[in-house]
Image 1 (cartoon, rainbow, N blue to C red):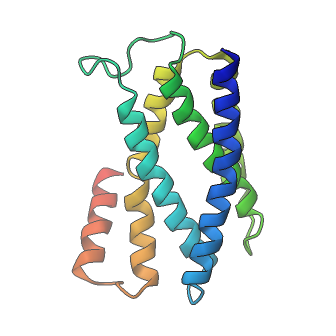
Image 2: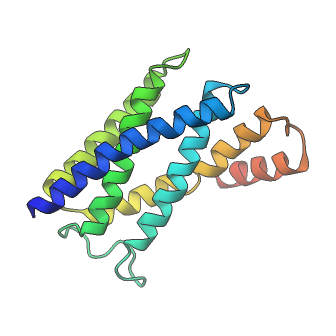
Length: 170
């Protein structure tokens, strides 16, 4: 049991550092683009990997959120730790932007609290990971529409397709 918590802490610490390094690398590669551009790429990367990890934790495809109110599996805890690390990174990173977003800070703080509560209680992993999956499934499309506009694909068929997907699914 204690090894599981050490693993979760290691994933979280390593994750926060890794997200920060990925962001710094992206800022150097895409120095001609905005701060928001790099954060959106990191966000899309997190969302994509989080959805894959959440999908891999499903124990019973006939009931993806089952078993409810049960002890979290190590895979669910690792997935929560992975996303916890991203939320901590993004909360810190958002303070370096020109505009501090209160709603974004509240959102990240609540997510961090939820992940920490789920990890500490080691319960309801199925529900938390399912909520993560639902919350992150559309994030890459949301970010892609802004990224495409910033790199010059505003008013193109590609941007229209992404905008349509987002507007249709909102």
